[in-house]
Amino acid sequence: MARRLDVTGADGVRLAAWEYTAEPGGPGIVPQPGPGGAARLGPDTAGRPVPRPARAPQAPNAAPGPQAPHAHASAPGVLLLHGLMGHAGHWARAVRRLTGGHRIVALDQRGHGASEKPAGGPFTREAYVADAAAVVEQLGLGPVTLVGHSMGALTAWQLAAEHPDLVRALVICDMRASALGAASQRAWQDWFHGWPAPFPSLEAVHRWFGDEDPWVETPNPARGAFFAEVMAEHPDGWRPVFDPEQMLTSRETWVHDAHWDSLAQVRCPTLVVRGLDGELGRAEAQEMVRVLPHGAYAEIPDAGHLLHYTHPEAWSEAVEPFLNGVLTP
Image 1: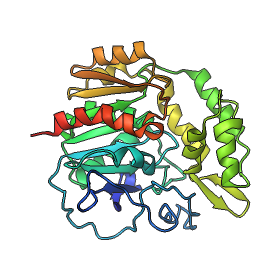
Image 2 (image 1 turned 30 degrees about the horizontal axis):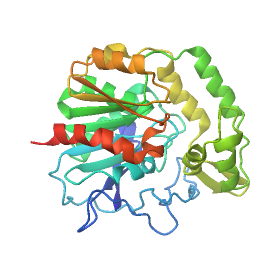
Image 3 (image 1 turned 135 degrees about the vertical axis):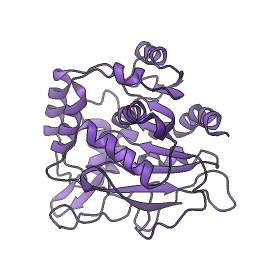
Image 4 (image 1 turned 120 degrees about the horizontal axis):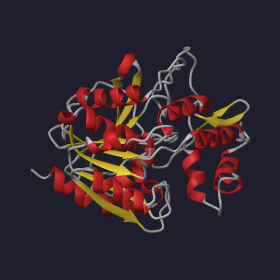
């Protein structure tokens, strides 16, 4: 099951983290949803109640409470960082396949999930990295193994480069080190502005993101499910739990620059994982491994960008040997 841990990030931003624990008497990590799926979010920065998100069968669910020492507090820490527009629950299906022996925490990063979405930001690289460092320190996870997907992977390797004392090892999932450029940012702006939100139903969310979205080349039900998990019901229909403009602001801070220099500063063991049909090409992934002082490579056949979400078993099979290798005393 999973329990919620409240953490204070940079600039006092309220962050929600979710600690996965092994099912008593059972193998591995088994997150269990509560009634109605994901937990109700707290008030937003204006004091208004935030609507309940869509039911996510594998999303973590717990009420915030006293943060007493956990039974697995002495186990090696693992911090999971989702990508842009994601949330902590997107890791659930992959995490439940990992064996015990790790203390696994997933973070809803600022602007995402149940964490605060400050109207004035900041949504800079520095803020995201400082938030992750605060989680590691406040929850006693260090030295931690960071597992990041997409934007979360960039946050993870920047933290590893800037605070090597906090990080034991690193897993980078489908994130490029090359600059994507201004044209990419403009395409994302056009894409967000083309969403037919509010959606009349969750079925409409599934259908649009899984089939009707112009960015979808072939029907992709898993993509529809991914976005349905980050929608909340409002009086006029279903809208994302995040602010699309804040997502564009977050992306703006990294999309124009290459990140090879910070990658080369990572000194801990690092696994670069890509989906065969993802956004990180094989040549660039292998160059990232070459640049890393202690890099390793893995790829998941048939997987795209959402590799841990769509192929959780194959993802865990690729990642677990690395985790066990770096976390074994």
